[in-house]
Image (cartoon, rainbow, N blue to C red; front, side, top):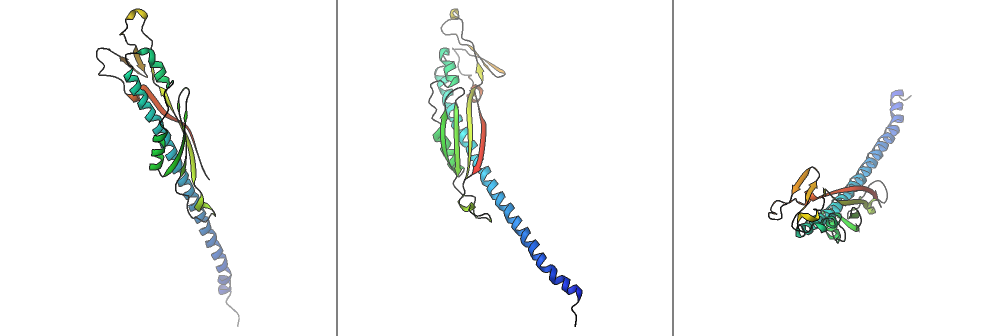
Length: 205
């Protein structure tokens, strides 16, 4: 008795169907692994950016405090705005922020004009198990650099203006007329300094 041709074709197609399904499953798991790695890498970059900004913001606030303490001595203003000789000690804040974002940070200060920080982080959690061998031990890393730039310019008073005269402070689009007899209305940290990232790069190790 001969087999039905239709049943024979079905029997031949079944292994092909299994192969196709297996291939699709493999691709799905591979895409999942890529997604896991990308999410981990994005988390590392977020942690690096936040840590670098935190370090710079910490220093910006301290520079502002220093300016407020010396507001009656305009001769010191430019050095303060440039961060000249000021301790760049914001790396502790960078490490705190990185830990809050499930990462460890290595931070270095970048003196100069403008001053800032470079932060490299590594995620505390690896990419995790996936179809790609070795991902369970891979930790994503990322770097970020932040800088602190002055927003303000000024001209020192003329010699005949008097010892108590203060310069007009021009901060972006705002002019501050400083009265040494009334220092209640002064610019804040965000008026005096601009803090921003300059670059960032992430990868897996």
